[in-house]
Image (cartoon, rainbow, N blue to C red; front, top):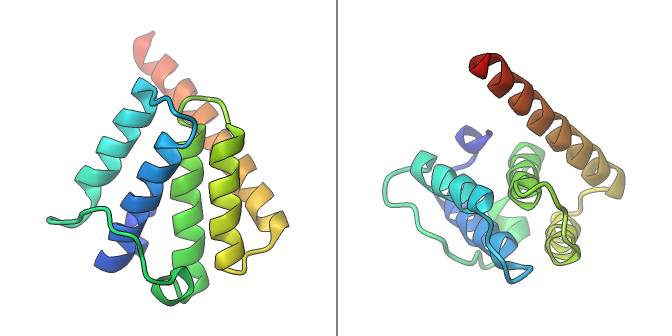
Length: 127
């Protein structure tokens, strides 16, 4: 959704963290895999998952921090279940980025709304 806000190093970190979220509960749903593949295809050519040396250094501004959390939340909610393991990873990332708990809650609510809107749009297309 917001990959355009991320530079190449940030996209590599996103792919690393998105894969970590996707694998967190030990099961990868078709929806999670499809979303990861879509993320990967929308990143710059040659992007590859790589662990960032420091999240705060790689994501120095609010725009990149929030973009990262939105993308990770989308991955966590792709299978319609927010698993405890996924939540733990995202909370740790948010803590490392010094993001407020309320912002994290607001992003979760916003991402859930986006999935509902996507389902509605899909229904329009099928009628």
